[in-house]
Image 1: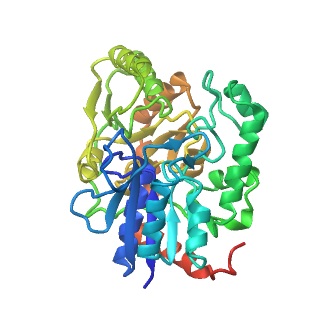
Image 2: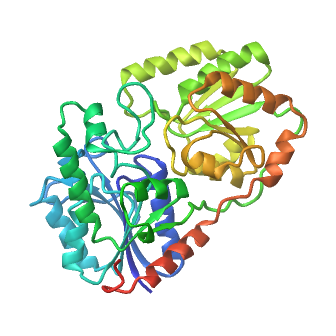
Image 3: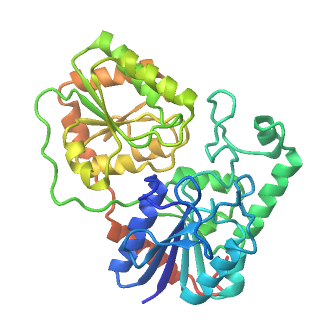
Length: 416
């Protein structure tokens, strides 16, 4: 039995993002496999107020989960600025829990300083960092999208990043990169949920031999959902609503679809927390233009997903950024629903066009409307795609892959 400390940049009960959900589900799977675990979700004043005397807070009744309040953080440098408070409390946690393995799922709100500090306090601990996005590479919220317009970046450089953030000199971007890579030198292995993301970090000069691809798993469902009958005319969007998930593109496609084939329904599941007034205004305009065929259903809890998925024929993933491994693709397949997704990034890796799903040009509402119309009209298409769409690995299989990785890392000589 090992002691495994799992850290993420939030808690799914406070912010139900894919990283947070996978991190906690995986921690629970480690526990089910017989290991002693502790899940720590970092948070700030957006979700919790600080408590006097400690940066740690309880959440719910779980004895093996806690929050780490991180209200003083340099997001540009991914650096913990509260060195005499927050870092000392993290040091105390390491000294008390003494994990055999530290599985990091993000440095946001935790800080790059945590990695070398953990190595100093626990020289033989195995440190694994899952790369869920491009935050280490890109200062634009890890999107690798230009700050002006919606053009995607193929790679980052101090000069290119300075062009996005003119107030930040190229020298500062270079120092940021060097500082992060120095801290990452103490990581034993990196995990990438997709080969696409792995290649991005190899291009950023991480050692390819230190990056292992382990696809995201999802918890099993009790039984398969009933197969829809008749015309496959109902589309579903699942996830947070933000400018990069492509919902405004989907709403414009729905408005166009009204002129092509109005006999459809689009069900929107998800909330829009912490979004700008400008984006919310664009969203409202999109809903008005799309008309009554679009149903707004708001946020949902994980246990509600089977029932919500049963009411749709197709899951649509219209993101306009380089998604790594969207959970909704695996969740749709787990429930027997084919996916229509943007043909970029990890989406294009997860969905095989014309084999187990359909890919569309990103940020192109006309193409999306065309493909949605085809999905409704073409006889036999749904059955053919659904038959080939394999479900994702279960959480037990995902946990075994990670536990095998942890076991393969001899300490301390196994660090590459």
